[in-house]
Image (cartoon, rainbow, N blue to C red; front, side, top):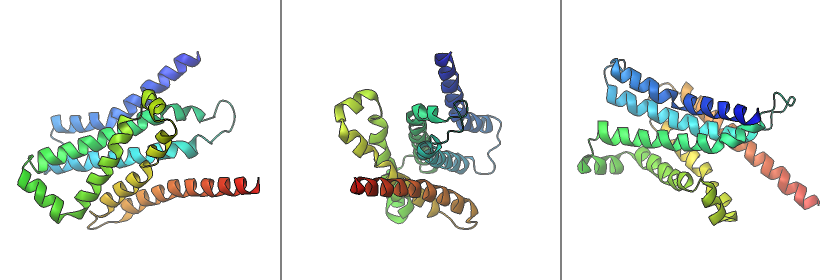
Length: 206
């Protein structure tokens, strides 16, 4: 019964995580991406990359929700790796879409973007930080790295800040959505700082 429930949850979360991609494919097939489909694909994959970063970071505080044995959300922890990999997946799609549909893989255009648009560099650094986190997310890498695995995966915090900065730096008008996502990230990181502070003080008292 427990195993069956876990499998159902796995498939539900897996398919739900693929839904944004399916929706983009649907929009491409039925020509529903507006006047600039290339830009729309880049924007959609980018925003979902950011959303999955936030969702992954939200797992730790959400698992604390425990009304009773039925409403406990501790099980969500077992899906944190999947959610983190989807964050990387949509980041890769975002980068690939930008290089393919916007720049056409032209070296001169790539070079120009890197030198003239700082937010591109910021986003690229965030991706490069996330890449080893995705590669080392398996159990075998956890065993190989030991305690260093946890230290390495703390890099998700600077990666998330850089991803948010990449997003905010592109604002030209309408700050509401950016303010919302920025506030969510601030809350998620703030939660961890508060928890770390109380744990440190508790250790001092002991």
